[in-house]
Length: 609
Image 1 (cartoon, rainbow, N blue to C red):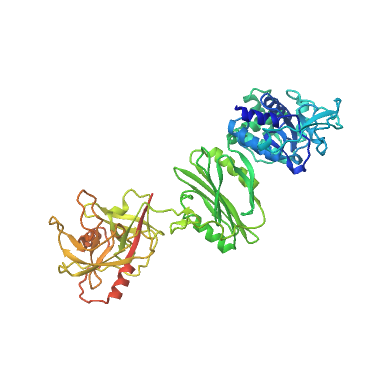
Image 2: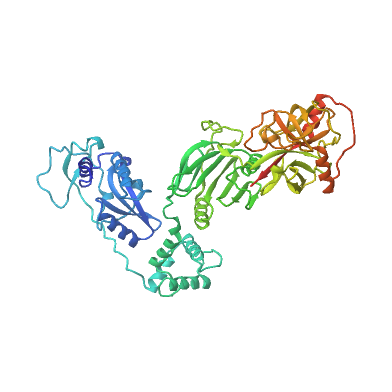
């Protein structure tokens, strides 16, 4: 510890100062809370070995808090940062007001809260004699001046003797345990049943009634933990059971957080997530700790249609994997998505024109802790007035593949394809169907592979749902003239543009560069997403299918592309039992009609993980 800091601490830790400020200026650093007096007393004693000004107060609801102070707010915040940094107090310690404390239990016999607020005394006029009723106090200067001065005044105050709270016995007798158990409310009794069920000793309903099943589970737990199996838990045993139950939550910093902008208050794991930004309808809380977790608060004005639209949109996001249960009701929905990396759970409801909820994204493989956090968040979720302003947020993260700053789920690869019969059978490049968890047509209809011929580079796909194609390919199996005009339809940007585009070029050769049969060389600039698209002649008939560019050491000019000829596609389709149109035609159609025909038969084929 440096001399500079030592001087500051010495100034701060002179006996409790005169409360010469408003009640809101008198604050404490609350460092811990315990569910029973014995545990809280032990912890207060432990803190007192390393810190001065340690106090303990009842918090209500059978909880007891340990705090350091009192201090002026500026000084308390300075100490809070320093103590956290040095590891002297837990990271989730926080500033607390005196009004939140009740009867003092530590130090034994102390009654700091009953010392009245008094005006500062001129340090030049100290009393001459100090008695048992006198307390030396310091009016603290701002932290920046604490290194240079100490204004100490001796003042006389009247103290009030309060009864010393007796420390409870190490454990209760059976009769005392029954008596203390009768003081438990329904919620506390249900919580014990929940903890017993979690520990594997109770398998009945959570009803707060301690019948034969609950008593038996208590006795089993007592025996497994080295206690006498009486079937009635003492105060200390109840605390031990709940400590076991809550051990999984240690280090998460579960605290109530109020977000007034979103109109939501709830318990959050504050040690592992922190607020990052607003992107309506979401308030983003990103990971800050060792656990790769994320949290979204959901808040927007709307009606049932808005709720249902949000339900659909959420399922397109990467943070909501496709596998997992989901349920939509008239005024709420729940989504659970899971894969090998994450588990995502979303709970949203509509009340009085306000849609509110949350999404928790948690690493896969940590299910026990995730379920407990979800339970705490759900139980504490409170709706406050107001919703997020639709114009909130910087808007600097806008992109076609983002929804309110969240990445839309995207396929592993997308390529073009085209209908070859009236039942919706699709021809595409073999590249599009390799190692896919599933295949979709235009991101909606599920597809199954009928045949995948790696030698020719052609795959035929069948839709799982009945389709009515706008247009179907008619194949031209007669070799076309060299240098004749051709057009390729496809999705060059893999679906970003939303509809197929048509690119024009010429037929450069009816063979490959090394004389390969059934391969046509095109003078055409195409992109990777165009692969699998149909090549059409001026009559609107399909001459072949565009092949993907080869990945090799030799780089070809940008305007060189290759296509597999239509007769190869037709023969493969016939072998698979798919009937295609190969009738001859020589009717030239208008360029506009050619574009519409090409777009009508061309589809986007997507391969998903």
